[in-house]
Image 1: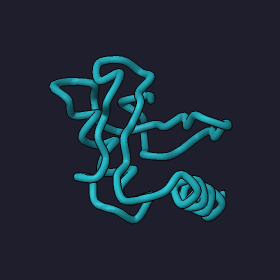
Image 2: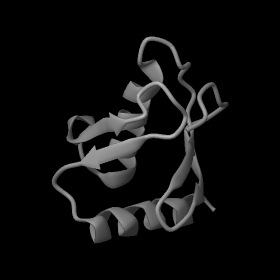
Image 3: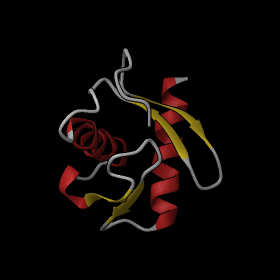
Image 4: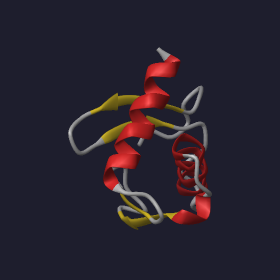
Length: 85
């Protein structure tokens, strides 16, 4: 995750990782809140279903997403990224 970007976007998708840019600064958990909100929009679920379970203070984070299967998540992320291209 890269904070203080000019816009919120997924910039790269690999097999098990997303590279995401966010507008929020990495101060007092603001970037983590923005990440949950942004991913909630991408996945079509609420930010409350997304939790940072590892890497809360670093650039590399592990998210727990409840209510969606891995295939649903991959499909929705792919669909979102194809729209913005």
